[in-house]
Amino acid sequence: MKIVIIGGYGGMGRLFAKLFREEGCDVIVTGRTESKGRKAEKELGVKYMKDNKKASAEGDVVIVTVPIDVTIETIKEVAPCVKKGSLLMDFTSVKTEPCRAMDEFSDNAVNVIGTHPMFGPRVSSLEGQVFILTPIRTTKKWMKWITGFLEKHNARIIVSNPQEHDDMLAVVQGLTHFAYISIGKTLHDLDFDIKRSREFSSPIYELMLDIVGRIIGQDPHLYASIQVQNPRVLDVHKAFFKAAGELSDMVRKRDTERFVEIMSKSAKHFDDVDAAMGRSDKAIASLVSELKQLKKGIGKEVALKHIYSGNVHIGVVKDIDPEFVVIDESGVSRRLKISNITLLDDKERIKHKVEGFGTIKRDFSHIFDKEVDENFIAQLLEEFNEGIIAVKVKDVYAGKQIPGGRKSVCFRVSLVNSDVKITEKEINKFFKRIGGVSR
Ligand SMILES: NC(=O)c1ccc[n+]([C@@H]2O[C@H](COP(=O)([O-])OP(=O)(O)OC[C@H]3O[C@@H](n4cnc5c(N)ncnc54)[C@H](OP(=O)(O)O)[C@@H]3O)[C@@H](O)[C@H]2O)c1
Image 1 (cartoon, rainbow, N blue to C red):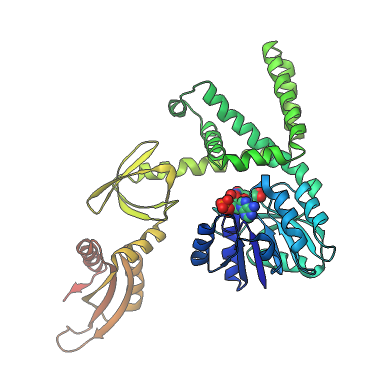
Image 2 (cartoon, rainbow, N blue to C red; image 1 turned 90 degrees about the vertical axis):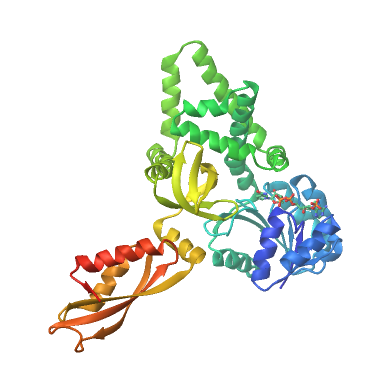
């Protein structure tokens, strides 16, 4: 299977080039900048071709994934070159025009499936991600191929048509982006002190600010194109302005009754207000719970994973404020931005400690009554302290140096190779408490 990705070293192209290479497909990427293409050849194990037309003629599957504003001209360029029986697809965030162009400019014997991955290139896998298909002209074989690939990666497949897609997306992306970008611009125009406002805020305001920040922090060209290129977006803007205008009018006229009526009507129309409350409560709880846990952890050891670099920092929490946490990492003081880290659970923390420090073996010999079950003691000891990784019974001896009715048991204990002396002390305490006599 040969897959040609037009714009293949860009964000989305690169993500799928990697996935198709992992499937064992031959992948050709094209793009305007030769140096980027050559770099992708080395990094992704793909072949680079500068000429879109020549590349398209070679593919069993040809995927167009270039910036939205050059998508139609690129489809016009490549569609006529796609081989009969092959599959032509695109990843464009709007569907009506690209699908019409793929249909119009390709041979009737070429299969055409429009697609829209509802995620960006930063995702680590397709698991749980929505992938919309708008088939235009296709055999069962190609539908089976693309759905098989997506199912294998546990993506959620939605089959639609270009019109429905653009109608839905005019709200799903068009309205939400527009509203949040408008809030971002309002904060700018008001010269509003966002940092200070967080101190006055409710958790839901913080969550909203983070969503505004997340959206205005994305590629502005893509977001502008999503607004400009969707033919349905302006109708949605119109409805939005009308609603906002009416509400503002009610406020100006101090018409509380009408405001309440409109808000209640909107709530009734809303799919499920209770479920929305529940889900947003969970989101807020998870934001707050991490901070709470860190606060509780002052003086204790934690493992914090940086969400972008993936680096894990293990250290004792020294100080915390709403923005930063300070930990002592093996004598080095480290200040980490809380929004950029996740707190790992104890199991993960120990795993990273083992990876970082390694393990060391120590033997402990104690005398017990003959009836004692040494394997049960080994099990108890393994659970006793987090620095203990594994415990084995190495030897049981009941010879002449051991008083009658007693036996000596040697336990081999694997420990995390950090703070070993403290763990050893704890282990000796453990044996004493269960009646063991040290040899
Ligand atoms: N990013 C997202 O979050 C996202 C999500 C869903 C869908 N999409 C869709 O995916 C498509 C690509 O988006 P992206 O974010 O991956 O964009 P991108 O990172 O800007 O990549 C686009 C690529 O297209 C190349 N290119 C530009 N003009 C070309 C031409 N005439 N022929 C061949 N290659 C050309 C660019 O190469 P140069 O750098 O050399 O110009 C670049 O490598 C868009 O249709 C977008 O709507 C994006």
